[in-house]
Image 1 (cartoon, helix red, strand yellow):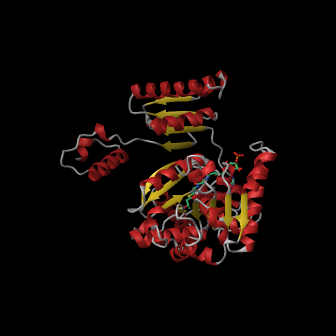
Image 2 (cartoon, rainbow, N blue to C red):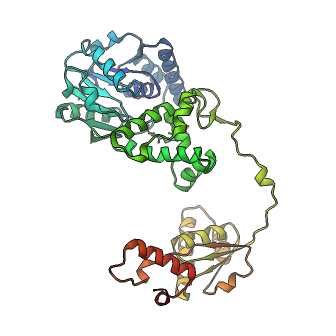
Length: 438
Ligand code: 3HC
């Protein structure tokens, strides 16, 4: 088979050396393949070389590569503006900007140059692979090969097959992706494939929230990074992907699916048009030390410290109302931080369950070496459980974390679920009795 061994792949050509093309060329060369890295623009080719040199330099500095491995990688990449270099390529990966006409034009131009056995891959993020494939004489040899940014780091790719793609071609590319250290999924030619279809509605929403001054960029990003455990916030991620690229992806997805979620937030177009394209241009939602740098530097939009200067009331005692999962977690957080916490549950039984659950959680943390026994005892000592709301009369701060437990409420079977949820909420808020309410 064509790509069973690296020796049998003459070389891989990567066409278009923007952020993605450069990353793809690097990852392919790092895995032992010979790469023709091609762009028609001299300056772009120079930039791409510098970025791969810098990235592999960083890897040597961090002991991830030896100096000789690094020079081997750079030796395997031929940076060029000459499309004729594709002549010996077995795999061509197209990564030019997200524009259907441009992609078709580039592939059409190469069609006569490359051998018949070539496999065409397009790194399109959202365009129809089928429409791109008809630009070459053998559309059955075209697949989507969608990488994620940064391509050398993200371990995942989507292989997109069209209705005419040969099974053998898909299999060759699947083996190839394994050889370059990626985990692949094979998906259908639908706008946004899998990941972008999910991701871009969310990113778009974050851009709109920022535009509507719903919250600061730092707070929007912190909510998703710290609250939801994502590696970066949505606005920082838009900067990484590029606001121009993100706009194009959303625009394509919106045209295809007419899903309001994908109607590009106007701010994306305004910023991209003004040259604020994100990290690659040195400015997007954030300002970076220089174009291409991941280092965020202060700018006019940094939140001011004025709010911090307002005098704050001292908090030493805290009340928590509730005994469910969230309440239990909140009580634990306050107790670990040394606050005296009183929580209110609906029964003595629930009081005991909360305390037992917090003890178990702290004990687990102790066994993992995250906390000392003294701190466990101190935290447990900070907690008092009660069933009387009056016991919160003197606390400095109250956190309401009451759960609505639908199962404990018996509604007539024909009650729609939204009505049950609504009534349950009213019930809890009114602290009323279910029969009275109904
Ligand atoms: N190029 C090459 N390598 C890079 C890199 C880059 N641009 N950025 C980071 N790295 C490497 C670093 O050298 C480091 O490597 P090492 O562990 O071997 O030393 C490693 O990645 C971790 O980098 P850092 O320690 O500097 O930083 P973080 O730990 O904060 O990771 C991140 C940075 C990998 C970008 C991480 O924040 C992340 O995964 N963010 C989410 C990215 C994401 O969601 N990508 C998908 C976007 S959607 C997409 O691409 C689809 C397209 O169609 C738009």
